[in-house]
Length: 504
Ligand code: ZN
Ligand code: ZN
Image (cartoon, rainbow, N blue to C red; front, side):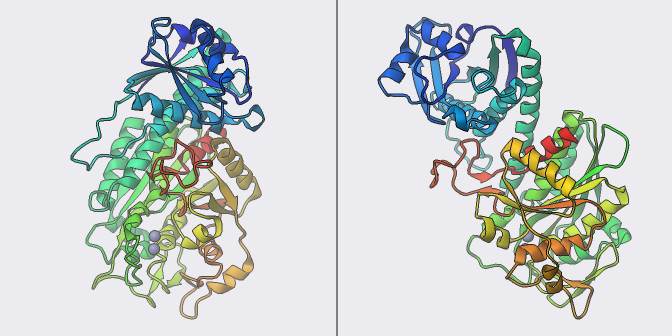
């Protein structure tokens, strides 16, 4: 999408649809919305007076300009109450308006930076949220449909700002929103792609291509390298599959010093292995590489924005299959840091490939390490599906950074405890640790297991309940389902990682 910022009045913009906003309870529109209302002879005021438009969040009304403006249509979108306002409401409103514009057949839209006036949010953040909401809300996954549904494609978004003093901030925000929005949609593509197409080799190739475009260093290691590194846990998981495993390493050197290392679980399909999963719903396991997708996408965005940070991305990727060569319950594997792991469940494979990746992260002498993984159904039981991701952290300063970034991007993360009691549960009779401590406290057990392979400030995000959106726009919970989250892969975590890196 071509995204630009223009100085001027929104009512003069050339586009198939103009997008302006209203807060709930406003009786006389002001600012850009007021200017459009005047140009239309009070048509927006009429909508309000007649009670047809209340300004509720994501409420949309369409007006036709009948030659009074260069643009044929005006879309008015509600931002909700001023008291409840925050940047994610801009993202949501932009998505709602853009989706309606597309339904009407528009191919170009012009919008104000919602919230930069009355809403009193930073103009840069407002512009970023408008661009993100537009890109995320218009996302479509139809690569494997032989008949596309013929929806219009909006290929141009212009943000129009009247106040020249805000233009610089709005331009910077629009650029950041463009990079972040495209990164999330790239992660969504990877997650939505079925596992027969997105093999570990294909994931590595996609990372390499995208990294080249972003100006990001990318090295893909093969199985011989893993052997040389002593990554026995990763090698154990992959040994049941005919697909060769890959270890993707990305590096952005925007500054000197110890890096921030991001690690993502890249299981391209998780059958559970010999501890096989029930058949029902197993197709969702194509999304078990959502952590890797988020890390690869975030690293590309960090490079595109050329953030002044040293960042490394690590994504171990393989399949977890049952076969005559598959690893078994009872097997003992040795991870790169020398610790031995007794296998209780071959379905707890994510923590095994992360054990080697987290051990490898230590080689970079990191300032901090954050891993993202679709790790446990226990986390989904605890916090719910499409509600929040759970996170664990051994360092309060890092935890504060994680929370403030995720609050800004409205990607919910809830901190969980690293209690000693969980450590007792993963003690093994045969090896140093075992890869499952049982169902109860299963999410805590998975986190203290990972901690065994860290010796640095570390945070672990369990995104199992967030990687796929199952509600979409047939939303069961329409009041809370954001319109910029599309059914299928969500790209959860990408924006928060980029925000965290931006503030690093
Ligand atoms: Zn599993
Ligand atoms: Zn898994």
